[in-house]
Image (tube, rainbow, N blue to C red; front, side, top):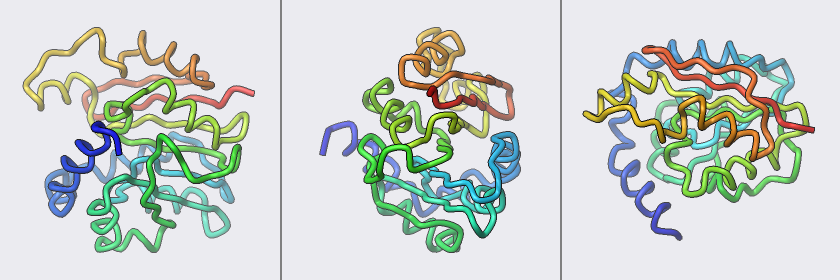
Length: 199
């Protein structure tokens, strides 16, 4: 396992049990982001880096009983917390590395990714891997329950022009990875970038 992955597992593994209690107000933001995502009944969607599965109930509601919801995370403790919160009933949970997904090409209609991009070891290649498993015309949502400025303030740092999530960086990054960004919102109470898988 790479040093990046070991660090991610250690960081999130140590915080998994208390994660939902630390961010109790995020539920409506997840629901609103999924609503904006435009999923349809019957869609097959992956929550990439699903953590404790906070998006899974909204994703399940959006795709309905005929849809497929997968939650993939690298950290076993996060998936355990998702199960303990009852979210395993909403989705199939996979202990998997989203940079090398155990899925066939073009098998999904959509990927939802909350807080993921900052933790990708090679963002261009890793976004291409997400594109690989999504059909042409399928959807990607990059989400965070607070915006870039609020997140930087929470961590006691300044916003950087080099931030991957800045629009002038994210658009070209997505374009080079098989996605066309269709919408970009960076407000205090959410960050949401939507993209379509290029044919």
